Image (cartoon, rainbow, N blue to C red; front, top):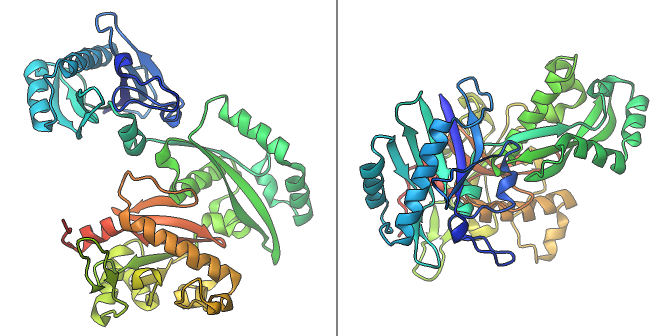
Length: 441
């Protein structure tokens, strides 16, 4: 199936004020970093619109130029939408929009769906995106955005480039002294040069460095920190799972050694140590009121624990979940939570108690807070932030730096790395969907 995703720009609607992006028809500089393969299309018959292709892929998954049969339909449709928008014919009702478009373009497109109808400062209405199939063409899928804000949050394609800590990744199999010398030799200036060479002058969405510990298999207490840089195109790529998977795939493609050998040297990269945390979002002691948020209950029914743990940790076998699930309470809103460690956790640490044995439920302002280790104190503060993020996040919401969105088996988590361990907190949105919790209005 041919797949096309892109953005329709409309110069007449652009906001040229410094730092401002128009509600409709203007593409930001940041959004242009979501792909390294931008294509630009226009036609003198449709002078007010231009189409920017971000993802044009044939049935074999190869990047291709947008066929003229598709680009001409897109530009014609974009011109018609612009003219009818500025003339007040398009209004803020998606169903009305779909009806009007299909009445005009029924011979060219089918299966049309649309996002929200957005209004700009001039009172013009256009949809945040449209999705359809082009008729009389091979099987295809086309999605076009008109809103930069919606595009930046909803575009789901990405590409991740990896810059390893040493030039030849297999050199990490050398002796500890040789590996240390190679790491020391790759100073910041050399690393930046390699990043620029990999980037090839294509501005990226994110560049981040993740540290993984290198071990000497014959002397496991000998450790070295290795910096792995990733260059990400598209906000959807900035998740811990996707970054880790891309890094592992890159290593195996560029190494003569198999995965089981790599696990001995950099286990944190190839075998993830993690804990899944399920806040009990719907358990209240004091319900929500009109102007005041409620407080959750620290009292947890025994008979619900394993059911909810299994439903939100579906990637783990039930027998593992049943054996290692524990419950606790957060200081944030007195929120109870269920937690279980991952099946690949190093040193066989599968329970929350074993991972953070000095965890206590106490405000950061208390003198007793300092009785926890510095690592646990930092985790508590990060965990509180994760709960705030998970409480309101959805599929396309912004996630603060230091945290990422992870989706597994249709369950959405907010994730963070702390002390070489990944923690994932189930979002309230996913929790409500899984357990059919009524949404308050």
